Amino acid sequence: LYWMSPTIVSSVIFVGCALWKSAPLNASTIFTVLATLRVMSEPVRIIPEAIAAVIQVSVSFDRLNNFLLDDELKIDEIERSGLEKSGTAVDIQAGNFSWDPETKIPTLQNIN
Image 1 (tube, helix red, strand yellow):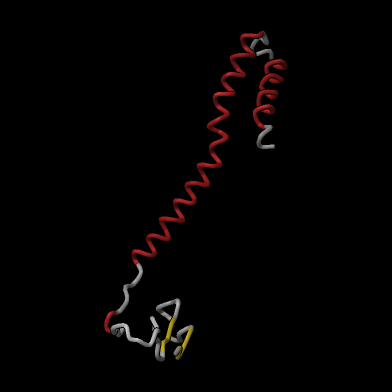
Image 2: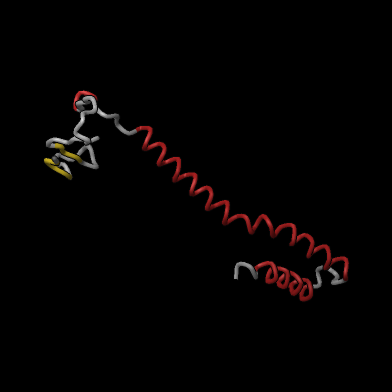
């Protein structure tokens, strides 16, 4: 139906002109109306793509904003040590993790 809209619109315009006799239906009038509708149809087809792009930009800005305004790591709660010969890159001892910083009970508790 969306791709049929130029045909439907031009048909409605020509039927309206024929019924109300508001403009003569000769070749020059028909050509002018069809050319005008053709020029106007391309921006109308781009509108859904533009709306989708604006929504994607809005979502991206929200994600960037949340990332940039997120709390930093608390340096005093992280212990960094040099790499040892054990082969482990990360060692967690009694780790408590939560997605929401306001929750009192962590999502993951006592991770070793």
